[in-house]
Image 1: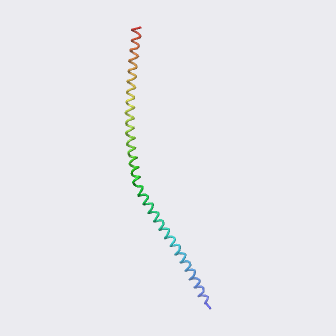
Image 2: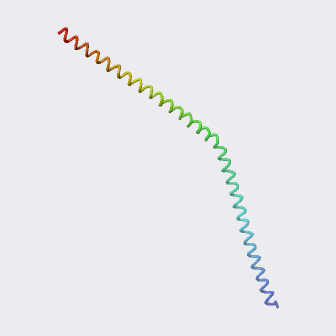
Length: 109
């Protein structure tokens, strides 16, 4: 027959073994999760590296578009000044025509 103390010790050892095995399984799960995360981060780093050239090209295109918009704004201002000066020229010509018309009507009528 077994001693009750020995039986308790064996039961305690079995519980400890079960606990240790459970901890080992948990550690393996954590390790596999960390390895999987490492792989995901490597894939992410690779994707970012692949997109770097595209991002640089987009940045250059945005800068070029900004320069084009500024040049267009300058040209629009020049055109507006030209239209304004042409408008005054048209008004002056119209006034001269009215004066000649009045002189023509007064002296020839």
